[in-house]
Length: 140
Image (cartoon, rainbow, N blue to C red; front, side):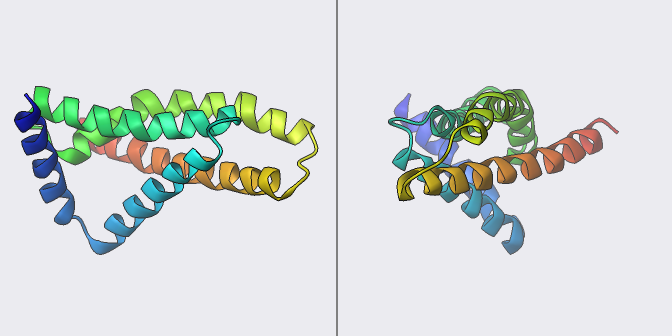
């Protein structure tokens, strides 16, 4: 089973390598930005949600490719993002960011968290706009 997962991940990476350079950069920026949430995840719920989105994305891509081998990475990624990222972004905005806005962020760590949370959620929101456009194109 592990070999099948490894093969699936190689197939996903090979497909990603065919994306335009700008798309690959965008994906790396998102991945690194979301992964940076690990720094805050131990005591900031918003960071845990963003890191969860990253992990769900990876797991969803692998599971989707295992279940639907003929589907493209773009198709699977679009569905995974719309299913998981949209609710996570809603949770982040309705809980973590509201709580952050209502409290005073004192100290370098807390200020860095606020900047990171806005950055990561902005990236997620922009990605969801692209995903919605892709989903509409897939249906037409």
